[in-house]
Length: 339
Image (cartoon, rainbow, N blue to C red; front, side, top):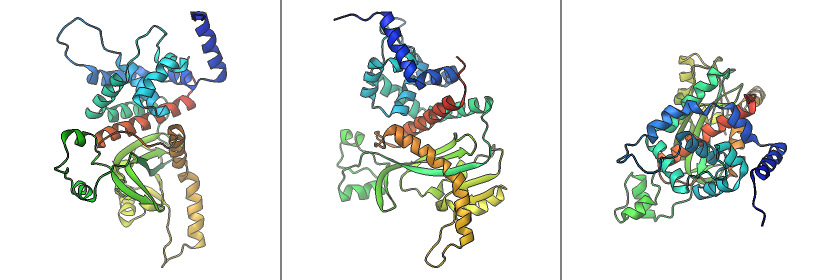
């Protein structure tokens, strides 16, 4: 069996480039060092001894998490893909002889970020980077939410009653508690039941970057997360959202802050929409539908599979990384490469 040399690897990479490797442009356009100060805060741990192997570079581990979010890979699958895929290795700056972080290292680093609340800081840091590089929030904002499903918990009725009260069933052992998500909830939309959480986002109309986000359990109504998402820095006062957000409270809020409301109207049994109202909905939907494109891209990249994780903090961290990865990927698509 022929042993591969450096020339063979160069030939393989050149063929990948001809086919089109989006990770090359992504790596060249993003200044990954802007994340280092936040990442080092998490990685900084006192060592008992000055001997032994040094830990992996914090930015390397962060880029691994971005890959994981973009391609929806489990920790074990991600470790294998880094070892197996030339494009992943090049994106991470690894060569054939490099030591690759294992699944446990990847899991632990993501856990540290989530528990320290650093994912939100990383998201804000990149948003500042976007604005500094000419991508300020423009032409109004759109608010919407998407259900993020997780594996369904198989509990008894009595156990579910306790969980809804905010209690943990007394009969559960410590091991069982660690494997149960007591934060997720059921919801029903279009007669389809889903179990998990919600990703509430606000995007700007012009560039379609996610500017704000909140994570809740799936039972929280979309309209309950509205004021928290409004972005006062947008250059336009226009606010778009679907009919779920239309309420007296929301309309009053927009008036108080001098926003121009573009919330969809919804008919009822006692009040059918007029032709003018229907036309207004059609006009607004041309803009509002842009947020659906984002959820569509996320669903396509993640192949609509459930998001695995136990507990609000872990899922919030994963959803935050997914939102951040979308923005990074979007920036790579819009911005010319620096080389």
